[in-house]
Every structure is written in structure tokens, then in C-alpha cells.
Length: 240
Image (tube, rainbow, N blue to C red; front, side, top):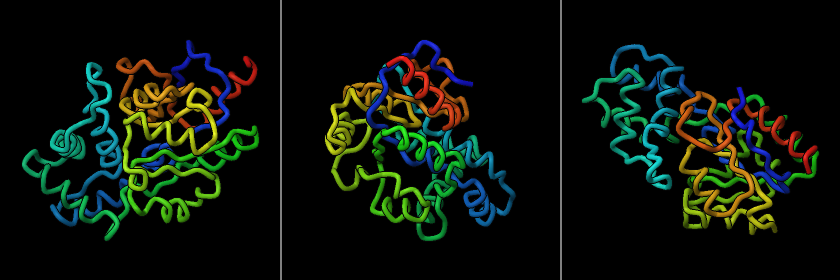
């Protein structure tokens, strides 16, 4: 299902992508295995994947759109939806955080539509960029995932010293592309990111919401699969 019937933006000259929860999804199997080893019971991998993505959405407050969840609220939400006990929330979260990079990767499942969507946009002359809240592993990860060749511009919060949803990081992305913000679209997975891109003056904010977590609470156009981005793009090509 698409959720952009009333959205008719101009054709973008560039599209800026988030990575985690957009092009690369959480690996539920890795999380479930680690939790099972610690607690001695089986965990559902799909439920773990859902829990991690749901934890982001539950912290959204429309009255304070640029404010994200607190660490405590994210831990509680993850525990609830993953099937953990409330008293296990803190320990389980710290277990996963500690294991990330050293034992497992939380985000390691490249969306199967990613390569096709990125190639199609580039074939239409659209510049592509990454604007991501990430760490020093972003570039190696993009190489490992086979995505780095798609992105001549990569903006990493760890490198530029500012994080989403601060509008500055989006403006840095547009500047590195040699474009004005209004000539760019941003594709991300949280409502806070959408508002940050809007504050930065981006011409289009597309909310990637594969689990339909934000239905009825976010005014931005939502897509539930990456190929729906191409449908929206093609519509704007005809309108330009």
C-alpha cells in the first residue's frame, strides 16, 4: 500500500537515504540467537526484528516532532515487543549493544529491492547520497553490503559532528551534492527524521514504514517497500 495520494512534489535532482531500517534491515536471527543463549528460551526472529523497529516509533511525540525517544523508553519498548520480561529490559539491551560489532551485527539484511531501486534512480540521472547517524564502521559496512558504489556522497554523523534530526546534517548532504535542499528528497524510517529534513528545506520527505507503524500519526507520504519509491518518482517525472 502507498500513502502519498495527495503528494505531488517536483522531480528530485538527488535522493538522500538513511541506511539502517531502510536499505539495511535488522537481523532478527542474530538477535534471537543471542537472547536465547542468555535466557535459555527460544525467541522469534521476526518478533525481534519488529521489536527493534517498533522501539523507534513508540518514542514519537507529534507535539515535539524533533525529539526522539529516550534510551529508557526504547529499552522498555524493545523488551515488551521481543517477549522479554520488564525486569530484563536493561540487561537485554546492554547485552545486544555490547555484542553488536563484536559478536553480531544488528543491521545486516540488505533489502532485496535496494540494488534495483538505486540503479534505476541513477539511470534517471538522479544523484544518490547517504545521510546516516552511524559510527566509524559505516564505510566498511557499505562495502560489505555491496552498496558503496551507489553513493558518491556519504554523510556520517560520526564524521561531521551533528546527528539527525538536526537540520544541519541534511543541509550538509545537499551542499556536498552541489544542490539546494529543495532539489533533494530524503528517505528515512522515523518521523523525527522527516521533520528534520523538512526543517532543512528538502523538497520531498518520504517515510519508509514497512511495518505500517506510523499509520494515522504522520503526515508525510509513506511507502512500505522500496519499489514504491520508484512509483512515486515516475509520477513526478510526468508532472514536471
